[in-house]
Image 1: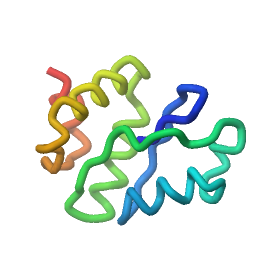
Image 2 (image 1 turned 30 degrees about the horizontal axis):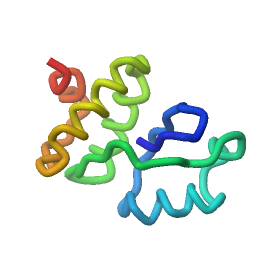
Image 3 (image 1 turned 30 degrees about the vertical axis):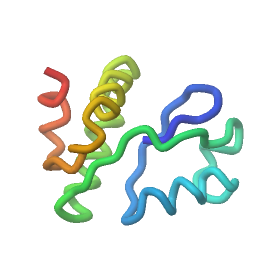
Image 4 (image 1 turned 135 degrees about the vertical axis):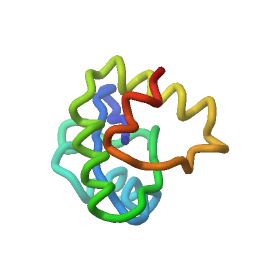
Length: 96
């Protein structure tokens, strides 16, 4: 997830999240950032394959913003151990 300057969150998938964030920050990439530039890469997770990443993306997009913010806080607290499993049905379990 990338936080825009206006506080909104963008969720997408990439094989290289740092590269993709730099694209968003430089004005290339998703139209989402036309209104407010990308500010920070705030959450990422390694997935098994492209299909798993797409399922995870949909699961994250379905979450309410307060739940996403909690997920981001948990990620920040455990950033050194952020390479956990990536399964669409695991997203809510991480918030317990």
